[in-house]
Length: 416
Image (tube, rainbow, N blue to C red; front, side):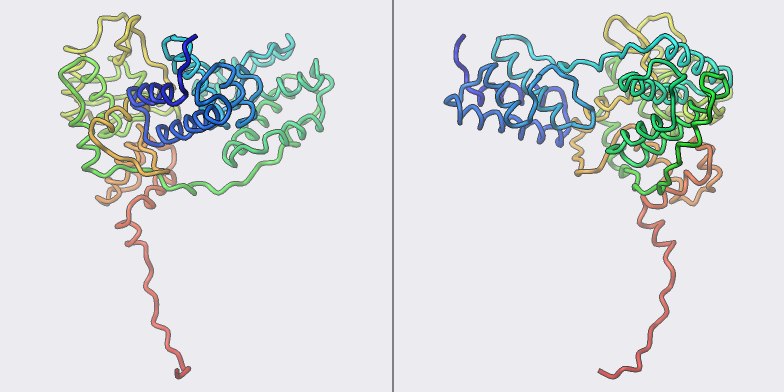
């Protein structure tokens, strides 16, 4: 095989990553990782890259001995390094670069009694009319708990104990506080279900103590008005994908819909005569009725008439690459936003997240600055509590100025 330097391969990888429209932060991370491979090859193989040299670098520098092993999603940098290794190896072998190389987490085979409990758990909460997203979160935590139990020698529910529950909660250390709090809450619900349905004979949900965390610590990311307009104007509305993307972004930016509700928006959710929309929100399972603004309505009409592929589905928005299909409810369209931000020349500062959800934050902030009533904002944004709306006070300097208290003048008797 013809020798090729790591630097030459790295240049091809960087070109590929740029063409994908990756964010500046991602480009910087990949550039650093590529420099590690270049330096390693220069130190050990006269700068030339080989598959074996790539594996040595992964083992010596990143501590990854099995290049195909699953890596926890929390280890973002290591996962990116493995991806870089695979991309460099593909170029070295003369193969096309792929972006997805890492294997998905293998599904653990649970005992039949555990599987039955999981199925019953899901069906019970479907019967209670919980939202699919909430049920999925409950089921994921229940599955993790049962996998943990199986891996530690538990084969049935009879041997479940308080110690097992405590050990599992200890295994959650390392996650963020909010993740642990949600996991513990979901675990209590599952343990209560197991006792109610007589899978276990003792109360174990009391063993799980709630974790108190302060809410709304983070300041939501918001756009400047000119940035939103700049991005919208960068969308090519002369092609079908541009018509679709423009309409989807407007629904979030102008009406404040969650992207999960945009993905699953159906034709019968729109009353064209009354110029209104009515949906059942996926997150809260609550109804939402909002007016259909003119610019949003015309964008939808333009897409439906002139851009949407012919496909048998009630969903308005679909993919434009065959086979045409509906979007997943969990698709957040980060790549879509990043692409149009790049086209519009919008730079993103570190730690500032500008995705679809931040467009909702922006709408709420603008409404607050216009001194709209909290209840009106909460109703339009679709919050189940007015308290959730108050977090947007943090995003506006002008609003924060209105919250300041006058400081009394302090007189001092001490002569200097």
